[in-house]
Length: 250
Figure 1 (cartoon, rainbow, N blue to C red):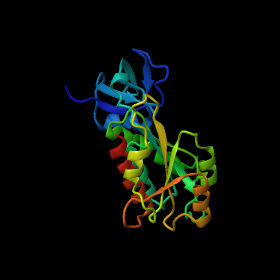
Figure 2 (cartoon, rainbow, N blue to C red):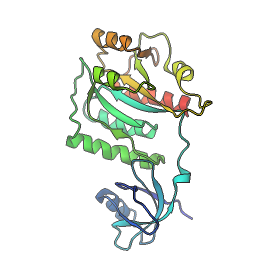
Figure 3 (cartoon, rainbow, N blue to C red):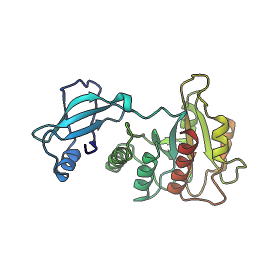
Figure 4 (cartoon, helix red, strand yellow):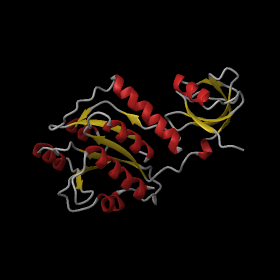
């Protein structure tokens, strides 16, 4: 049997066998491009990790739910990653979102810094496009959830609002310890049955965090780590850091 095609839908919160879930317009177009026939086997999922086997309806506009696939969801990682980053220019933001979604990031938060060159409106048309890119990347990579793209936050607000259990780390090319070593030591090992903690990655603009921002982070107990010997562009640093997290945290 051919592998079921994956389709992202708005919500499966009230899902039940036999229910018909509307497909978003871009997913309807995808079904037409693939020339799927009524009754075609589908795998539908929403942004919250809900997942069902379904069949394409006769009109091609909906999916009829058949079986709950919650048991097929990927194993919960030891910790979940929230990426808070200064925003890159132009098309580089799409690359950042696509690749970090593939690497399993739970949430991406545009971070306003003293040296930011891009200010991101959380409800702009551009952000909506990036959310579609995140959903498509999640679908292609086999995720059963979609990373959220939050509204822009300042560094002080993000640091002060974090949960007490969160692990917050800031990328600094001058730091002594590497990200992988820090994660291996600090992240939950799952041995005590505690729920996974969020790892909040703070990545600044290409001009770096200001001295005032670094001092604020130090006062808040934020760890500083490095990725390697070279200074990276924003989207490269994000992808590299998320790849390290995926490798270490599983």
